Length: 107
Image (cartoon, rainbow, N blue to C red):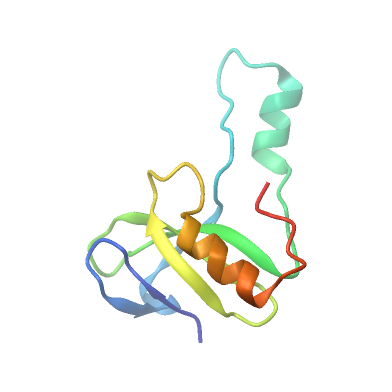
């Protein structure tokens, strides 16, 4: 079972208390943007085996959105952080690099 800690209320919650929100750190395109950019934003997603950054909502808790870094193959969680963060915090990147020296980064 996947267990994530909400960075807002500090509760360690099982995935049944959370709602997944898809890939994190996407550049969003909306009305007025080229069709190709909007299509890529809506439908093109990474689906890596390994380290992935995701959006989660603490649905049965404080209700806030947050981001998580985890391994999709092992469910190992490297950390969680506020949704307003534009890139993964340095301490989480360091944890990933310590365990996965061949990791190429989040972009």
